[in-house]
Image 1 (cartoon, rainbow, N blue to C red):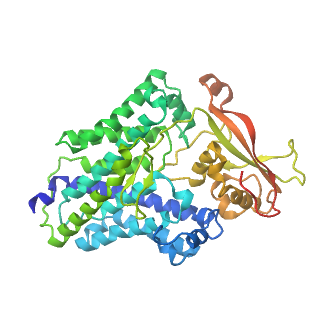
Image 2 (cartoon, rainbow, N blue to C red):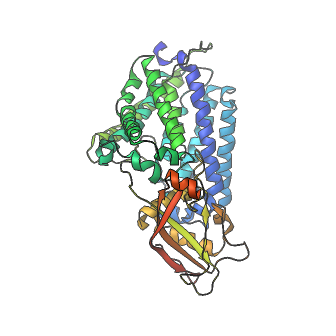
Image 3 (cartoon, rainbow, N blue to C red):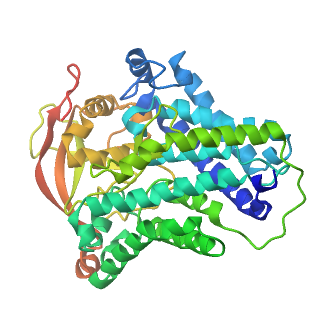
Length: 473
């Protein structure tokens, strides 16, 4: 079938596959370096406890059959190795069927991780990586030109990501309709980046222009993805520019980068396609069958987008094949942060020697400037932002975090930037306090060198010591 392939998009496929492999590498590296204190056998939310109560049909995973920290590490590092192989172009050196199996491996491994990751893996970009990774299995290699239907499904996914996010904003916080959300967002976003302070201090008219441009990019431009070239390429390029703007303004894990990966499916580069053979019949049948399945499964995400009770970042099947997305349907006006402190004093006093734990990404010391971590994902730092919004977000894991800090647990301390206590002298008590943070002004920055100003709000967790299980806040 001549219509089945699109030879002009061979370079688009190549760029997309390389970029996706790089995102896979970051995702598996994040899992390998952080899993022990989060979901390991002694983690805050241990996998063995999860799989004991959740059946395989609800959370398909290799770890439903057996779990050990060693096996998890093996899977995570194997995912890194496969991602590196895909980056190096190994999929182009093997037969088509072998290339498809090679792309299936990281998808299956990461699905196994996400489905037992619980709260730590509840972010929209996890499902987005899985949905994109599953489609990549059917993109083919150098033996055949890219299949038209798979390119369409990638654009359809990009459409749902952008249009769904646009709708959730318009239906959610009124500041999006008034174009005032970005007067607050750069200050209150989960993890500011090194330039977020400067974005916050842009003039108000520019904030309104940012918000208006966001609406155009998410509510109008996505429809242009399905128009003829070069309009579709221009629409994809505009989305890429918007995502790079977001990369500069904050730390959003690999959300922006995987969106850029998807936009590559609509770009047509001016390069002559290499000679390829006709697509095998079995390949055409498999691709068309899978495409029909995915289009059928799209019913629920579409119904969700059209619903007045639209939800964001929801998976409708345990394989994460077709999902719904969205971000920042509401924007916080005030930033709160949970500050965790410890003391070696036998009796904890309000004016005692309390020392603050420093985290890698979340704001702490007002003088410490935010750093760029994305696309690497600091899971604990992100969840502490949610914990500051409401203790309900931290009820299942915060108590265990405090226990591990009281034990000077080595794996847990690796998630932090710095512990104020030496390895052989853990604190006797831990407490947590809630502070309100705001960006300093230009004048305050010059006078104090601090990018944050913070004010004590209330106690979050009273002084606690190891005398049994620690309750959450």
